Image (cartoon, rainbow, N blue to C red; front, side):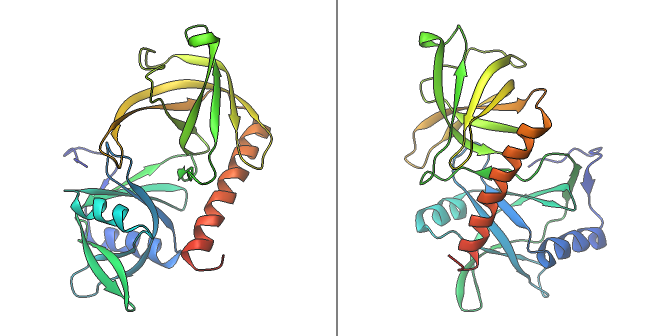
Length: 245
């Protein structure tokens, strides 16, 4: 993650950085570790802050291959929400130990971005319990198509588009006739505004076209349904993390 010299969201004072890291640690905040442009990502938590080096110790993934991908990356992005403010910083990871268990270590950040935002934490949709989005539009084959949801927040959704059906749609395009099919919840009718296209690299090395959308004029009752579903996913992550399942 590159910082601009005049970035209004950048925090570089050591005491401020330490306070933010302590907040993430003490509140057991869920954080997302990912490599921009790749599909490899995990939900983690801060385990400790190394008092000698300032390094951030993080829980690792249960899958060895995912850990290996993160460790191979030149830089890994960490994102989490602290007091409804998005926290973001990046750095390479190295293997570590904490309490006799394998962990990940990231060098103490020298800069952190704090971005006020209304969206809740973005959560991955697990392949074991998939969710999808039905989009109806005249430009699609047969006028409709289903897309697997990669991740979800209260503000929007990112969809996998392996066939590139959405690749020619312009940024800002509004799709008014969409339905989120969420496991264990009623279907949610939404309007989506296209934010960006991205080419991701999957774990098998093959590219995947992904499309990020923001919800457009989402009614409050439907936002509640989406937030409740996100809460279910977050609790499942926490349960797995602390061995309560």
